[in-house]
Length: 317
Image (cartoon, rainbow, N blue to C red; front, top):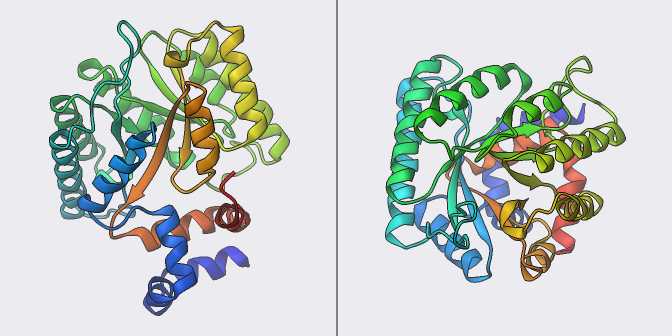
């Protein structure tokens, strides 16, 4: 029932205006979304870079149903990448001989580029964005969405990597298939973001219990850490962060050979702590005019996220 209420609110322009204008909810938006356009995204990226953090930027655009909508999203990324390059925010931060670590990169949802109605169009759009990223010295990570798009996303990733080998993958630990996907992707130079997963999935494809998801995350982490790729551990869970540090020591990985990733506005003090220890910490920064739909859908996918965001508002740890 709570999910239905949230989805109904997501479709209400009246509720959207209330959220945008009410002081409390406006603070929530500012905490988790870096504004509506490229200038705000650039300012946030520069601020985080000054704190010793890396960034991946997500232009918010989902439910794309027409080629025209996909084109708007593509152009937004091209504009963003040009601005990042012009501001010097894509500078390689890696020590000599180590994995390339750009200060700022971008994250793409293929659904926003037309995947739902034309996979070839989505791939062409993604390829153009990859070209623009390469031109300014950075790269792209393909976000993962619900399980029905996993095969399509990995197929497109494989083809993009032929020309842009640094293109990042995202794997979700709550999917039962992910250990196998980790083994296939733990290859030399392969950038893989491992997250728990946020979509509501059926039991036959995804673990449902928190403990089972956590166990899967650790198994997947071990595979990636033991492999030849570049693991990107996306988690805010203190236990998993500690296990990640331990696994890095076990597999003799230097801080330049993997990274932690966290959402913008979530546990900023922990982000700083890890950075001070010498770890690469990348902050996932969403921005764009579709911020309202983004926040509401994240809550609807898992109503338990209400508590997650509420805790983040009162704690920076």
